[in-house]
Structures are given as structure tokens and as C-alpha cells.
Length: 365
Ligand code: SAH
Ligand code: SF4
Image (tube, rainbow, N blue to C red; front, side, top):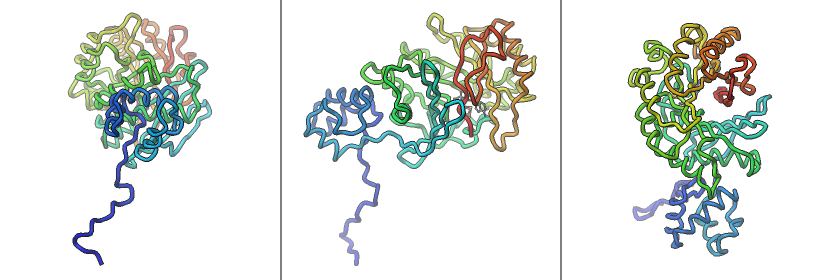
């Protein structure tokens, strides 16, 4: 029989142990501080986790045996678990990550000859409600922590046994609106670019936004920042507001002004992503307005044929329409490429002016 003074035993799993995986350098220092260790050892933990890619405390040869034993009993080292992986014929793999609270997000590993591109999620769900997007239909569930963002990268690199000397590109084009999770995004960016860790160059990281002007302006104030991609997807306010509710807050003119003021490095261009929805965004008039928008600042256009998903009510246009838009943009001297949902970006349809590829779109749901 239970007595009033009985203290209930903790339920299984209710005792939360700290997890070092994905924490920033300072957080690791504080964690060690809480164990009575000097905070500067956080740097040793940081490089062991991200540069050496050690996955068990016993491997941390840069720490004393006693500290390793203590970490073993008191601190987890757990990257997000990959619970589902789907590899397509082109070699890209979509992974589903299990987060600590049973939520899941997706990431995509896309190997190319000279590099690998990882597509990352920034939130569970998304608040922006774009009508053509499967994530938008989920609504927002929560932000990812910086550790969970870094965790997706490490989980994919470890899973694919990525060689340390092979360049890594990161694109925030998975689930969520990265600029809606600004602080965690930038904390993850700091960790991912740290020379003692993965040391990914900032120019290899691209953040795609649906057009949060406040976030774009804030990003522009950072001397060290990722590259910017804007999901344009509509060329009139009337239409863009219909498919992207964010346009009712910041319209095309507000966007163009923010992008024209965004401080770019020499040679840097803003990517304009443009989803092609049959009968909605694929006409020649759309193309002319798209070209005019793209010429207001250094830009390159990435055309993304719609990736169908259940209940969306949209379709991808025919190839002829895609080629015609490519031609129009090329003739307007706007660099353009086409992103294929399966297979690498194809320059063929676009002719000679296609300069640069972007990874194919990860939204394969
Ligand atoms: N929230 C950010 C980043 C994630 S979405 C943003 O919107 O930019 C990444 C890209 O996928 C965006 O350019 C978006 O327009 C595009 N997208 C969303 N759903 C799509 C679909 N079903 N088919 C093709 N592209 C899609
Ligand atoms: Fe969110 Fe981007 Fe999807 Fe829009 S397109 S709902 S911003 S993830």
C-alpha cells in the first residue's frame, strides 16, 4: 500500500541527462563547469565531437581517464537517430531523424562528384502556410534547437562515412522557415563554421527564406553569415499573396528593396527560387516579371518544377513550358538553372547560360 510520504519513483525516461552532441563551444564549457571541470575543456570536447567525430566517450583521448568515466555515466553523446532512409536512383538519400521528444524532421544527403550537399530542416512543421508546400500544411510544431540543426549534419556525415577532406555544402531547404528560427539558426551556423569543428566555409551554407524581410535585414547585419536564397514563386502581389501568405505582410516591393540593400560580397548573388506550378506560375508573362525582379540586384534564378504531393491540387508544368521560361530568362541575361526533384540539376534544357546548379528539391513527400 502506498503511503503519503512515499516519493514516487521517476517514470522511465523522465530523468533528463544532458546531451553533449551538437552543443556550441560555450555550452560545452558550461556543461563541464557544472561537473566541476574548467570551462576551457569545452574546446577539447568541441573538437573531439566535431573535428575528430568521436562518437563514444572512451575515444576522447584528449581528456583524462577520470573525466571520460564521469562523462560516460553523466552525459549522453547522442546524435539524432536516423529512423528511416530512402535512397533514390540518383544517389540522394532522404533521412528521417528522430528527435528527443519523438518529433521527426527530414534531411537529404546529395552526393556530387566533388562535394556533398546536405539539405537541412530548421523547424518541425512551418508557420508560413504556403499552399503548395506539404510542410506548410502541417502548421508549426516547434523550432529546432541549434544542437538539433548541427545534429542533422553530423548524423548524415557519420551515416555516410563522409571523408573529412570532401567539401560539404549545406542548404536550409528542408522543413521549416529558417529565418523564423533566427537565433538557433545562427548559433548552429557559428558551430558549423567553427575552425575547430567541421569548419564549413560560410559561402557553402545557404539559407532559403519565404521572404521574412525582418529576418533578411537582420541577417544582412552579420559580417559572417550564410548565403541567401529567396523563394519567390509568384510575380504579382495578388498571386503571391494567394500562395504565400507571408506576402500579405511583406510584398514584392518590400522584398525587392530588402534584397537590393542586402550587403553582398563580390561575385555573390542572391538565389531566387521559383516553383513552377502548371497554369499558375509558368506563363511567359510570369517569366518576364520574374526576369525584371531578378535584374534589380545580383541574382540567379533556380526554377523548381512542382513536386506533387497528395491533396495539393497543383501540378508540374510540361517540359516545353520549363524550357521556354529558361530561354526567356537566359535571353534577359539572368543566370538560370532547373532543379530536378530526382536527379541532378539539368542544364540541358536551359542552354548555355545556365551557370550553376543547385541541389534538387528534397521535398519528396
Ligand atoms: N521555408 C523556406 C525553406 C524551405 S522550403 C522557404 O520557403 O524558402 C525550400 C523550397 O522548397 C522553397 O523554395 C519552396 O518554395 C520549395 N517548395 C516547397 N514545396 C514544394 C513542392 N511541393 N515542390 C517544389 N518545391 C517546393
Ligand atoms: Fe514553410 Fe517554406 Fe513550405 Fe512555405 S515553402 S510553408 S515557408 S517550408
